[in-house]
Length: 114
Length: 112
Image 1: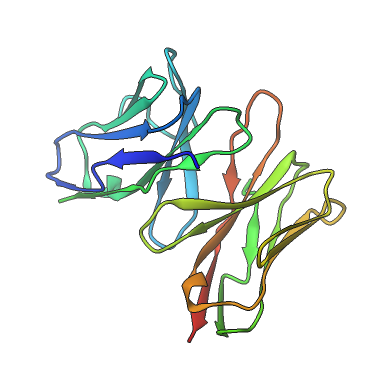
Image 2: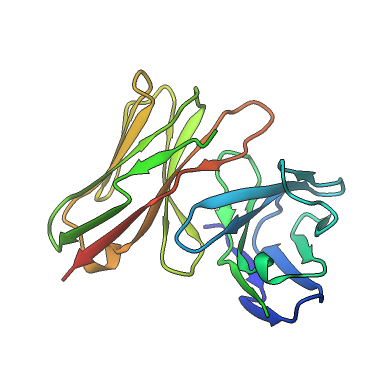
């Protein structure tokens, strides 16, 4: 099946710094990638939809200047959390899709901001 | 509004028993999917059922969809300890936007 990787799997950063999370589709070209956020014991909340070569579409309430998304190629999307604060600590999961019927999810990145 | 509300929120059963999880949603959908998530991991796609389908099987999994009641159920038969995970339903509306809306999930614990 289609494989999606995320890097890093865990990251700890200090408040005020920026963190970049990579999402790669390893064996297919993803026309669309999605970024989700998940708080402990809660569901996934869609943050933004990213299409290769175009600006990401953010969900209501998600600050686009804080969560910068770049989808530079059909196999790579990055999420940069700028000026991170403790409340940004969360589990970030990306997914990638080709035909939009099925999303293939990455293993997630655990971000802890101290 | 939040689509895909699962119940129960938590379910604990013994190995070998069947586990049934339910999902309800509020507006018309195109597809409904079930995913599994082990603690601290990504999601694994289990099964997709389209709005014009009523039942689907995959191994020990059986999914039903009742569009008149806007609900779906996931049945895992002959459960195993390895089935312990959180299970989420997710809906999409089709068209040009296939965004998935996830429910809150059911935490299934299968005791050996």
